[in-house]
Image 1 (cartoon, rainbow, N blue to C red):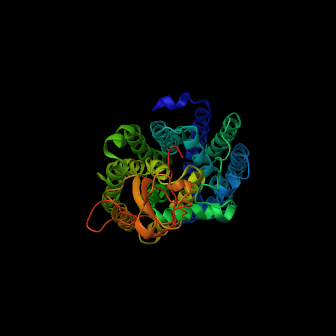
Image 2: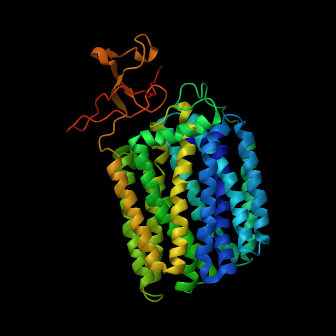
Image 3: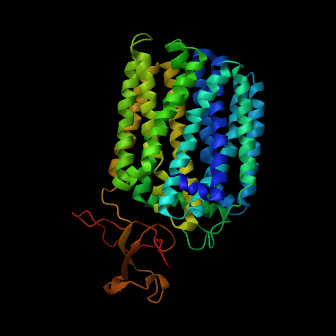
Length: 475
């Protein structure tokens, strides 16, 4: 897995991601304690609202990031967004009103919404081999786990000697370090022919809409959105409710907030380390669905632990549950980039990553405020139970949407292309209806809809005359 770090550009980008996320991990702990300082037992409602604002910025801005990345040099965009995030983090220690927290979170996450999908779309261009890209996804997952493991551990150590508002200084340092590392890397330009060969149009609105079209038309991507809902339900309980669970329910000190969040990160790290080999043997669908169905079971255990009172076994069960939630979330999220890459032509990858970023955060936009408001109004057990039901619905939806037989190459019919069109070089005449052939199938300019499965069989057959495109190796 570490062999991909021999690529100098990827090594710099991975380091940039890691240092930025460690800083973000410090900010996660500091923001939770700031909310508790400002609102006491209502901190879950404050955090839920603040994180809903964060998701609103992601949902509104991320679809435009793919278009922006095609117009602005990628390095310029990434460095500018890192510097913006550093400036906002610098102001966070000085807030003393809840509305100020909301405003700064909006600015911070607007910058992140432009940064993250642009960053994600560069990686498959740097590492085109499937094995290398899979390894990079696991490393990227590990970098995200630094936010929820090393960040809280470092926060716990720092809280022993400094007040929590000093943790934001680490966030500033993380973003500045990320900007310096990105600036030192040589990044590829936009894919050649972007907007001409893919599903997207040449203009920004067309490229932004292209990613949404990919998700709407591709069964495994619709399933990916349902899986995102399951992980959002589990993650919302952890990131919104932990501070009140620890401080008010179990009456633990501030450092225990870091311990609980660190357990979530530890579970995620352990799974991410073992996933590359597991994915080679089992496949994306089995791993992701299995992990997703584990999340509602663990949330049910968390509901029992918080309902049992602060004494006895409840605290230990909660820490184990948080670790298992991290493991399940990693099992779903780590292979997601592989699914996206399999489902989009190269020119459409920026639009696909931007759409996934936006659509997945729409799920968090639902679950973050729900976790906060339910915990504040109805209690922690109710919040865990309701979010567990949402996670179960997401996992069941993904199972129904993602066909068990899901090959890359699909036979399909073209009824609207001329007989001498280059795309039909290996096609066969299908009577007066058009031309049939099969190849690695993705949605783009020549194919606009997915071939329908043959009745009563587990394989695909040519669909009705529709336009949609495929990625074809060597053409």
